[in-house]
Amino acid sequence: MEENEAENTEERSSFLIPQEKYLETGIHIGTRFKTVDMKQFIFKMRDDGLFILDLRKIDERIRQAAKIIGKYKPEDVLVVASRMYSGNAAEKFSGLTGVGLLKGRFIPGTMTNVNLPGFKEPKLIIVCDPKGEWEAIREAAMTGVPVVALCDTDNNTAFVDWVVPANNKGRRSLAIVFYLLARELMMKQGKIASYDEFDYRTDYFERFDSGESKPKKQPEKEPEAQADDVPSKEASEESAKEESEDVRAKKALAQANESAPKKAAKKPAKKEAEPRKEASEESSGEAPAEEKGESEE
Image (cartoon, rainbow, N blue to C red; front, side, top):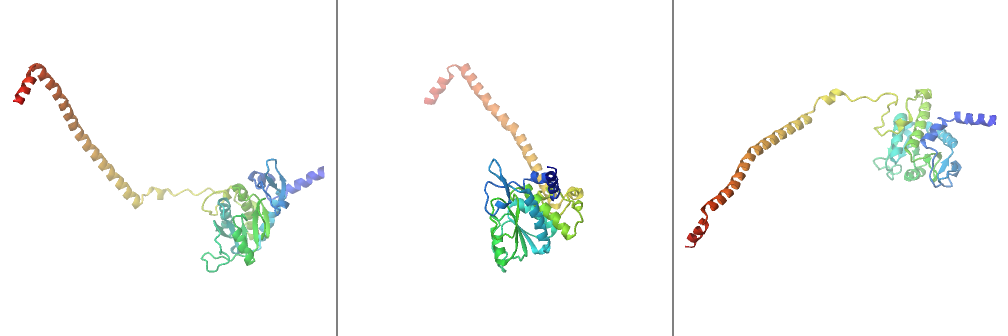
């Protein structure tokens, strides 16, 4: 029993990050479908039908993938990320390590049509989802370019040279994969001497921003107050227009107020004429009949 516990402790300590961190990100949670290609990386099936990936194989494959990528120059490596979450994390990875990035839809002919404006000739490609990036895998196979792919339980691994089993749909799981790849690759590039010098956290790879390489520990730069305080020419013109419109509105309101009493004075005059007519009729008595007779004559 003691020997088994010691072995488990050694395995946990040999992980790139603590096992609990892996579990928090959900990198091991697959789908309700599995393929024959991914069967060797599946640990078990949960009661709700989800297949669970083996954490030890995930960790081992990420470590080896970093070694494979480190054998190539950064400019010879291309990351293909068609999904939103993978594109965000891959952008951070690209900014830190210097590898190429193709974000969004992979245009057919990118690696085979030399006349295409965005033609690329990588020596290694990394795909985040073999389903969404199948065209990139196909063109890599046609041109003899090795492929490293993040594969979920429902992926086929045809023409994939190195499989990294992982939840390739979750934001946090993709962030942890590129976080570890960036850290290991920067160690091999000599940019950092130890893990302590890697000043980035996993949530940096989750953020949606421009992808600038800023350490998470450093506070974000505050916008310059002077630039905001000084109004631009367009802003001053807009404010002048607003002021002129306000002046016009005030004048129109004043004119409306001046004309309102006159109209109000005319209405009571009409109302006063009616009671006077009734009063004259009552006082004259037979006057209306006489008037009628005179009119008939």
